[in-house]
Length: 254
Image (cartoon, rainbow, N blue to C red; front, side, top):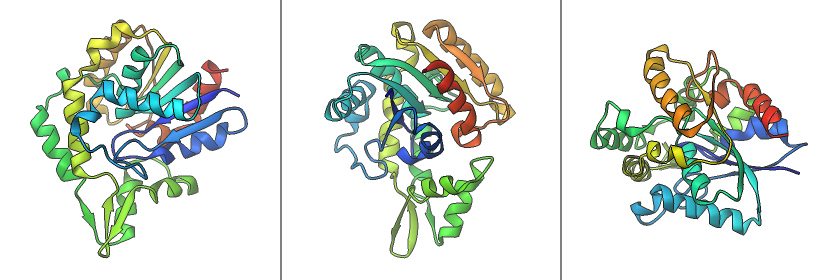
């Protein structure tokens, strides 16, 4: 049975792929992990360990531990950057990669400095909610549809302490990851990618389309990747349209 390894984006968990796994469970072995500092995986003690090549080493240790000889890589957002660095460091293991709106937003094209982006994410991940309903309302607002399986994924995103709700991933983890993404510019390795890569690109909000088109065009040219724009989808494309991701997996990863 083909193996699909899933890696989520910043602030999420392995359960973010729950709907896709549910639809594919009869035909694929789905392994969806919590990255360090997310879900039930403890954070790295050193910020340097979030740098891309070291993340690739960590992912390789995970695949060795699970005795996975070869696999397809399904990733979202920040997870897609890690997947690309993994693909060039351990090319013999990865059979192909589908990136869900990630891996193509090179930091050198960002309008924010590293310091500005770090400050934003540190503050964002230290938010506090008084009730579960308030926290859930925020999670629901970030996707275009809601299902019982998404509710299970949402329950995996918070910590409850002193009668308050927090993101499970903390601001310090987010800051380390943002610094790593600025240090290790993905665009510099696009030309080294050998595995077949497909990018499923979001189209909402429309205000971001000019920037997305620019960086996706660079990615397509340098990585020799296929770029597929999915109408009516936000950055949480696999939550908005999980059936599209399932369709592309069945099409390309037979």
